Image (cartoon, rainbow, N blue to C red; front, top):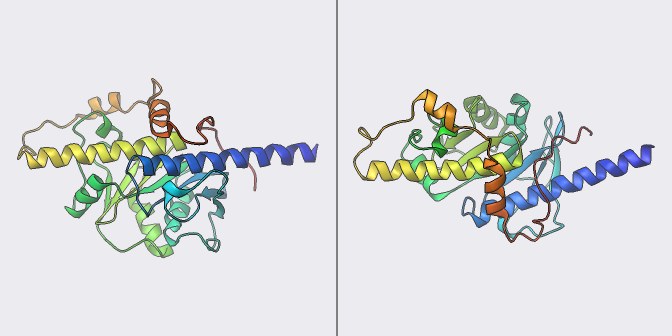
Length: 246
């Protein structure tokens, strides 16, 4: 009986490894990360799995990530900014996956020193704006990572001044989708600013944003299929819950 349970847990962990690898490659394929960035998935109340350190688009099948604990130091070889994953998971029981991304429009918006405003459907998921962290220092200390997680609060994303963003989702499909939505939100905001219409272009109302920020209709599933098309491990479907062990 114990052997069967251990086999099941091993299988679930391997499924999470595949999910994290797929997400890493999808984020890279979409231009949401470059040589830098990382993503993770919660395993249970005390642990999470982060992708292999290195360019995410170069992570191949079978290249496993590292299991990290929410408390204590990160394992050897894990990137220092993964501390922010620890801090967010500790504060947000609803978060099951996190993406640390550096998309071009998000980076440009972050350098302006302000977050974009919710003006279109994808922006509704961050109504009225994403959180904003006004410090370009990397999150390589527990104190800075904790402060960023606190600033994130209950939001879906936080833009880091001159440093990209961190996105948190209810599962990996949602986290990857939100990373894409955030980049599109910044693209629209920058276009509105360039047109000189920032003070005249309409903003979403709270009611409009609530109506649009709906995961029904396979919103995340369709984006996941789109971003993972052609992936070498694409037969696996993400979205399973916690493993409930470790």
